[in-house]
Amino acid sequence: MVKQFIAVWVLFVAQAASAQNFTTAIAPGAKTAFITAADPDRTGPLFISEAPLDAEPEPAGSLRTSFGFHFMRPIFSDHQVALPVAAPAGGFVVGDVSNLSPDFAASPIFKIAYEFPSGGYGVQASAWILNLSGNIDRTATVVGANQNVNTNASSSTTINVANFVEGFGVVFLEDSKWAEHTHFNDTEVTYSIGFRTASVEQRYTANVTFEGNQTNLVGNTKFTGFGVTSSFSGLHPLHLDQEGAGLAFYSHLRGSLLIGQSIRDSSINTNMAEARTAKESITRLIPAMEAEFGIKYGTRFDPSKFVPRPALVWFQTGLTGQYWGDVGLLRINDSMGGQFTSTNLLLVGFTVQIGVDY
Image (cartoon, rainbow, N blue to C red):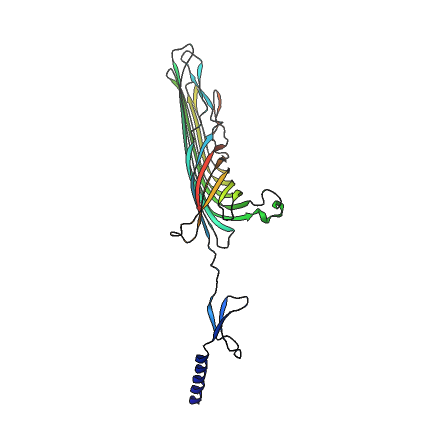
């Protein structure tokens, strides 16, 4: 029995060695190689390769980072105050403490986003810090007296914001029937929803002095909160290729709703009346809005020696504005009327940012 098996095996090897004819075929609908015998009388594969031919690479995620600055200043419509100071001869002199608006200040902003390999969805985070300050110092001569009225005021605003654990999605309006025959059919819209933590601090001081008499006004406010945030961003190509390089118009809208502790106090001290003080410490629900519009330019960057695939480097600049509700200084009354109003904070300015999509 063993001898017969060996004889059959030797005969099979001899026939295979003498033929030396094999062909490679691709199975229909698959990318697996089959090696079959050239002998037409022999059917069926002798060997099946485990390695796919012309296999497509696995899709990779997209990482986006950007850094830039907001250049903004607040609009203090309710900080325009006039402080009375007593005159030794009787009556009073009014010192005008108005038109106090800090200069534009640079606010650094950082963003990072990751789009999943499947495309269209991802996570992102962003943060920015703003420190603003301004002051005025005036000296005026009182008519009929040889004395000057000295007026000075200073103001500071600090805002810290972090948007984190934000999920986002991307929608192309060319897939929407309502935008099919409009100018927005090639617009890309990105929407997001997540969480935000923020703090807003303001301080305002004013002083008027005349012939040794003076009036002082001080206001402080601090809010720290946590809540939800959502944004919508649009990218409308002006001259843009399929890879995102070229010129485009961009827009960005964000709304947030925060809950937290609001601590405010105001005081006024004058020679004409007793000192007055107002204080508040409550839990408050604060709305916040942001808007940004401008131009974005992108160019492809392909340093093959350093990275395995090309990146998109872009630059954008535009106008920006922010609205913070109910974070104004606490109203306080004196003999000349009310100082401050419990109102909103409005910031306006422009932005410059640079980023990389990889």
